[in-house]
Amino acid sequence: MSVSAILERLADDFASAVPAVDNKADHDRWQAGIGPFEEENQIEMLREEMDEDTSYFIKTEEPYLDGGQRADVFIESADTKLPVEAKLLRFRYDNGNIDPNSFAKVFSPFPERTTSTLLTDARKLYDAGFAENGGLLGLYYEPVDESYERMSPEAIAEKFCLDVDYWYDFEVETRSVAHFDGLRHPIHQQGAVITWEITG
Image (cartoon, rainbow, N blue to C red; front, side, top):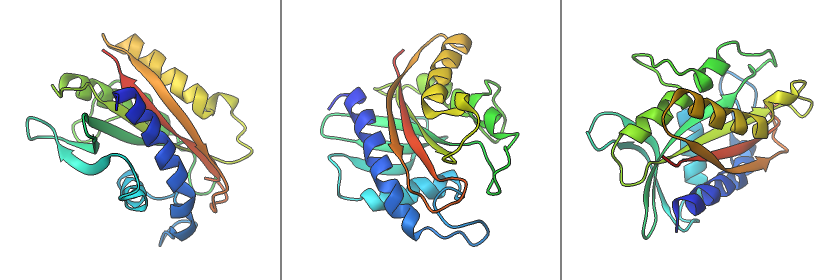
Protein backbone atom coordinates (compact mmCIF):
# COMPACT_ATOMS: atom_id res chain seq x y z
CA MET A 1 0.00 0.00 0.00
CA SER A 2 1.41 3.40 -0.97
CA VAL A 3 1.95 6.21 1.54
CA SER A 4 -0.86 8.20 -0.07
CA ALA A 5 -3.25 5.26 0.19
CA ILE A 6 -2.35 4.65 3.84
CA LEU A 7 -2.99 8.29 4.76
CA GLU A 8 -6.32 8.27 2.94
CA ARG A 9 -7.33 5.04 4.67
CA LEU A 10 -6.12 6.30 8.06
CA ALA A 11 -8.30 9.41 7.81
CA ASP A 12 -11.34 7.37 6.78
CA ASP A 13 -10.80 4.81 9.55
CA PHE A 14 -10.29 7.43 12.25
CA ALA A 15 -13.34 9.40 11.09
CA SER A 16 -15.46 6.23 11.13
CA ALA A 17 -14.32 5.48 14.69
CA VAL A 18 -14.99 8.96 16.11
CA PRO A 19 -18.79 8.59 16.63
CA ALA A 20 -18.40 5.24 18.40
CA VAL A 21 -15.74 6.62 20.73
CA ASP A 22 -17.81 9.77 21.27
CA ASN A 23 -20.77 7.71 22.51
CA LYS A 24 -18.78 6.40 25.47
CA ALA A 25 -16.29 9.24 26.09
CA ASP A 26 -17.12 11.10 29.30
CA HIS A 27 -14.65 13.65 30.64
CA ASP A 28 -14.47 14.19 34.40
CA ARG A 29 -14.14 17.97 33.95
CA TRP A 30 -15.66 18.97 30.61
CA GLN A 31 -18.90 18.19 28.81
CA ALA A 32 -19.56 14.73 27.35
CA GLY A 33 -17.99 13.52 24.13
CA ILE A 34 -14.58 12.95 22.60
CA GLY A 35 -13.98 16.60 21.68
CA PRO A 36 -12.73 17.90 25.07
CA PHE A 37 -10.11 15.17 25.52
CA GLU A 38 -6.45 15.93 24.90
CA GLU A 39 -4.68 14.79 21.76
CA GLU A 40 -2.90 11.74 23.16
CA ASN A 41 -6.10 10.47 24.81
CA GLN A 42 -8.10 10.87 21.61
CA ILE A 43 -5.47 9.08 19.53
CA GLU A 44 -5.35 6.18 21.97
CA MET A 45 -9.15 5.87 22.22
CA LEU A 46 -9.48 5.88 18.43
CA ARG A 47 -6.66 3.36 18.05
CA GLU A 48 -8.35 1.02 20.51
CA GLU A 49 -11.68 1.37 18.70
CA MET A 50 -10.02 0.47 15.40
CA ASP A 51 -7.84 -2.31 16.84
CA GLU A 52 -7.57 -5.38 14.60
CA ASP A 53 -10.06 -3.91 12.13
CA THR A 54 -7.61 -2.39 9.65
CA SER A 55 -5.21 -3.59 6.96
CA TYR A 56 -2.34 -1.98 8.86
CA PHE A 57 -1.03 -1.92 12.42
CA ILE A 58 -0.99 1.25 14.53
CA LYS A 59 1.57 1.98 17.22
CA THR A 60 1.62 5.11 19.36
CA GLU A 61 4.55 7.02 20.82
CA GLU A 62 7.08 5.19 18.64
CA PRO A 63 10.68 6.49 19.02
CA TYR A 64 12.38 8.36 16.21
CA LEU A 65 15.44 6.76 14.65
CA ASP A 66 17.75 8.71 16.95
CA GLY A 67 15.91 7.35 19.99
CA GLY A 68 14.91 10.82 21.13
CA GLN A 69 11.48 12.18 20.29
CA ARG A 70 8.49 9.96 19.61
CA ALA A 71 6.02 9.89 16.73
CA ASP A 72 2.39 10.20 17.82
CA VAL A 73 1.32 7.45 15.43
CA PHE A 74 3.40 4.86 13.59
CA ILE A 75 1.75 2.86 10.81
CA GLU A 76 3.03 -0.52 9.71
CA SER A 77 1.59 -2.28 6.68
CA ALA A 78 2.90 -5.20 4.67
CA ASP A 79 5.27 -3.00 2.71
CA THR A 80 5.38 0.42 4.40
CA LYS A 81 6.38 1.91 7.73
CA LEU A 82 5.10 5.45 8.17
CA PRO A 83 5.57 7.93 11.04
CA VAL A 84 2.66 10.32 11.55
CA GLU A 85 2.50 13.35 13.83
CA ALA A 86 -0.95 14.41 15.05
CA LYS A 87 -2.50 17.57 16.46
CA LEU A 88 -5.92 18.67 17.63
CA LEU A 89 -7.45 21.29 15.36
CA ARG A 90 -9.84 22.46 18.04
CA PHE A 91 -10.23 26.22 17.94
CA ARG A 92 -12.98 26.60 20.56
CA TYR A 93 -13.09 25.97 24.28
CA ASP A 94 -15.61 23.68 25.94
CA ASN A 95 -17.91 26.70 26.42
CA GLY A 96 -17.75 27.77 22.78
CA ASN A 97 -15.38 30.71 23.13
CA ILE A 98 -12.46 30.91 20.71
CA ASP A 99 -9.20 29.56 22.17
CA PRO A 100 -6.70 32.35 21.37
CA ASN A 101 -3.75 29.95 21.59
CA SER A 102 -5.12 27.22 19.36
CA PHE A 103 -4.14 28.82 16.06
CA ALA A 104 -0.49 29.10 17.06
CA LYS A 105 -0.45 25.46 18.21
CA VAL A 106 -1.12 24.48 14.61
CA PHE A 107 0.46 27.13 12.41
CA SER A 108 3.37 28.68 14.32
CA PRO A 109 6.75 28.03 12.64
CA PHE A 110 8.65 28.83 15.83
CA PRO A 111 9.69 25.74 17.80
CA GLU A 112 9.47 25.80 21.58
CA ARG A 113 11.67 23.80 23.91
CA THR A 114 8.87 21.65 25.33
CA THR A 115 6.10 21.86 22.73
CA SER A 116 5.71 21.64 18.99
CA THR A 117 3.16 22.79 16.45
CA LEU A 118 1.81 20.91 13.47
CA LEU A 119 4.05 23.07 11.31
CA THR A 120 7.22 22.34 13.27
CA ASP A 121 6.23 18.66 13.40
CA ALA A 122 6.34 18.65 9.60
CA ARG A 123 9.90 19.97 9.69
CA LYS A 124 10.85 17.45 12.38
CA LEU A 125 9.53 14.52 10.35
CA TYR A 126 11.17 15.72 7.16
CA ASP A 127 14.55 15.91 8.89
CA ALA A 128 14.19 12.64 10.83
CA GLY A 129 15.66 10.28 8.25
CA PHE A 130 12.83 7.76 8.07
CA ALA A 131 12.55 5.73 4.86
CA GLU A 132 9.29 7.58 4.19
CA ASN A 133 9.07 11.31 4.89
CA GLY A 134 5.96 10.78 6.96
CA GLY A 135 2.48 12.14 7.35
CA LEU A 136 0.51 14.55 9.48
CA LEU A 137 -2.94 14.13 10.97
CA GLY A 138 -5.34 16.73 12.30
CA LEU A 139 -8.43 16.06 14.41
CA TYR A 140 -10.72 18.97 13.60
CA TYR A 141 -13.83 19.91 15.62
CA GLU A 142 -16.47 22.60 15.16
CA PRO A 143 -20.07 23.46 16.08
CA VAL A 144 -22.66 22.85 13.38
CA ASP A 145 -23.22 26.61 13.11
CA GLU A 146 -19.55 27.64 12.97
CA SER A 147 -19.55 31.35 12.12
CA TYR A 148 -16.04 31.51 10.65
CA GLU A 149 -16.25 30.08 7.14
CA ARG A 150 -12.47 30.18 6.75
CA MET A 151 -12.19 27.73 9.65
CA SER A 152 -13.67 24.86 7.65
CA PRO A 153 -11.55 21.69 7.55
CA GLU A 154 -10.96 22.15 3.82
CA ALA A 155 -9.73 25.71 4.37
CA ILE A 156 -7.48 24.61 7.23
CA ALA A 157 -6.04 21.83 5.06
CA GLU A 158 -5.27 24.29 2.27
CA LYS A 159 -3.75 26.89 4.60
CA PHE A 160 -1.44 24.31 6.15
CA CYS A 161 -0.08 23.34 2.73
CA LEU A 162 0.51 27.00 1.89
CA ASP A 163 2.25 27.65 5.21
CA VAL A 164 4.61 24.70 4.82
CA ASP A 165 5.48 25.91 1.33
CA TYR A 166 6.09 29.43 2.66
CA TRP A 167 8.29 28.53 5.63
CA TYR A 168 10.15 25.43 4.48
CA ASP A 169 12.06 23.98 1.54
CA PHE A 170 9.70 21.02 1.10
CA GLU A 171 5.99 20.54 0.47
CA VAL A 172 3.01 18.71 1.91
CA GLU A 173 -0.13 17.65 0.07
CA THR A 174 -3.56 17.05 1.55
CA ARG A 175 -4.45 13.38 1.22
CA SER A 176 -7.88 13.29 2.85
CA VAL A 177 -10.52 15.35 4.64
CA ALA A 178 -12.80 12.69 6.15
CA HIS A 179 -15.88 14.16 7.85
CA PHE A 180 -17.81 12.96 10.89
CA ASP A 181 -20.87 14.38 12.66
CA GLY A 182 -23.58 13.70 15.23
CA LEU A 183 -21.31 14.07 18.27
CA ARG A 184 -22.70 14.64 21.78
CA HIS A 185 -20.73 17.73 22.80
CA PRO A 186 -22.71 20.99 22.33
CA ILE A 187 -19.69 22.74 20.76
CA HIS A 188 -17.52 19.97 19.31
CA GLN A 189 -20.48 18.62 17.34
CA GLN A 190 -18.84 17.60 14.10
CA GLY A 191 -15.52 17.73 12.33
CA ALA A 192 -13.05 15.92 10.15
CA VAL A 193 -9.87 13.93 10.18
CA ILE A 194 -7.36 15.60 7.88
CA THR A 195 -4.20 13.90 6.65
CA TRP A 196 -1.27 15.36 4.76
CA GLU A 197 1.70 13.68 3.13
CA ILE A 198 5.18 15.19 3.25
CA THR A 199 6.18 14.98 -0.39
CA GLY A 200 9.67 16.45 -0.24
